[in-house]
Length: 333
Ligand code: TYM
Image (cartoon, rainbow, N blue to C red; front, side):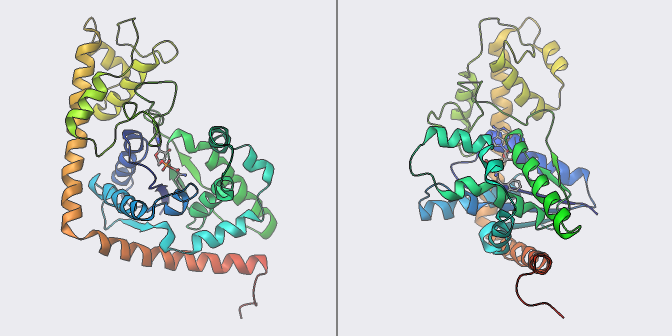
């Protein structure tokens, strides 16, 4: 049996990028890996590396948890929990910091990008963030970690940290494999297709929120930036806007790029965009309906309690053994 672990930060609203690159993928993996175990969490400790308003953070934490279920994850097969409710994450994060080099963290592109945008007032935790992420993963001996493309470097660091620990203290952590999909791992901003679609973006036209009204979603797709070539073809280097829309189309329909090109041969962008707008609106519309149902049913708290209890038991055991390996505390008899 394999173990799959992943998380989503409750900072900002969930976007179509999160849905396609992560949430939808978790559901597909759960279907294609019926004998395996899924640990999915809301990474609220990661969210507070930048300032968050307390009540909004709490609300978004629940939103992310409910969205996992709305997307179709089976609560009986998913250990769904909130990261901060399993205190071992933070503790292992500290232990791993002791064997992570400053130079390794300085090379992280996400940190470099964020620190370029904001020079003063950056928290230390933003710098050590990838170490906590490594802890989230190896605490559960994850075999696979499904993520979007932007997390690839963090996963490489996680593998290095786990391997270093194993070399030093003897085989102890499973070295996880990232699972990054071929299509949809990097959904781009609709207004600036050179940049990743992100919830923390200034212009709200560039991203689709999973909570946007459906007519707003349609409008955003229809006004997505394309080019003057006018042919629906997959060429990210000269038609990055169209390539991005084709990525979304492909993930939502399972059609290949060649099939999409064939379908829209000689038809131009208007028809293509209008069909895509309907596809996205219908997918997100269904998601929003299920989301409302889950929120109203009141079942979420029970699921999160049970997820926390199971995850805590597993995490406690692993962390205790880890501390023994390092030589912390008294020796267990
Ligand atoms: P976060 O919250 O930024 O994003 C959650 C997931 O969504 C993916 N994603 C995208 N995929 C495709 N296109 C996009 N535009 C796009 N934007 C986001 C991300 O790659 C991610 O898979 N550090 C993580 C959260 C985390 C985590 C972990 C993940 C904390 N601990 C342990 C895996 C394992 C993050 O900030 O993701």
